[in-house]
Length: 137
Ligand code: ATP
Ligand code: MG
Image (cartoon, rainbow, N blue to C red; front, side, top):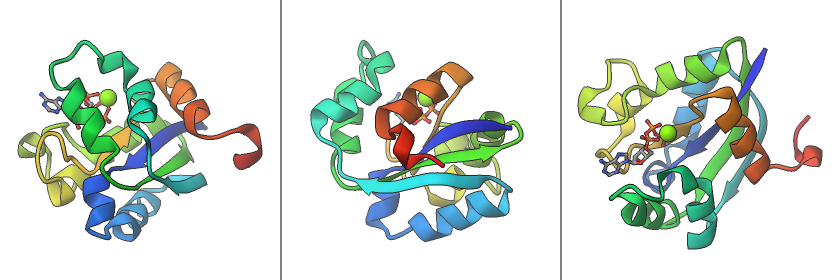
């Protein structure tokens, strides 16, 4: 059993899609063990995406991530990290496979509707960045 961290990004929450996306996550067999809706400050978004701070898109990405509320959740299941990445689809929705969240919901490369941890170490960092022990069952 493994845990991963998910964000339903501002573009999706703005279009009132969090229910549909969470239903797809649950139908895929992943369990929601913690969840909250927050509106990040610029500093919080920059801390979350610190691994990308040297990338040319860092400024635009962090501005987008604090442009509106997001839904953060901790997902659990066998091989949850890889299974959620598969459900999300490619970063660029133009390359996302049929049946993936980004294929069905993403607007463009930046406003691509969902985030998912890419490795056990990043999942641990991201979960602890947004949730404390009392908030996780
Ligand atoms: P995420 O980390 O959000 O799950 P990812 O792991 O598929 O996505 P990363 O390479 O970690 O992709 O990029 C983080 C996010 O930065 C992407 O989801 C996207 O919103 C944005 N992004 C990535 N590449 C670009 C780019 N070239 N131009 C603009 N935005 C980008
Ligand atoms: Mg990533």
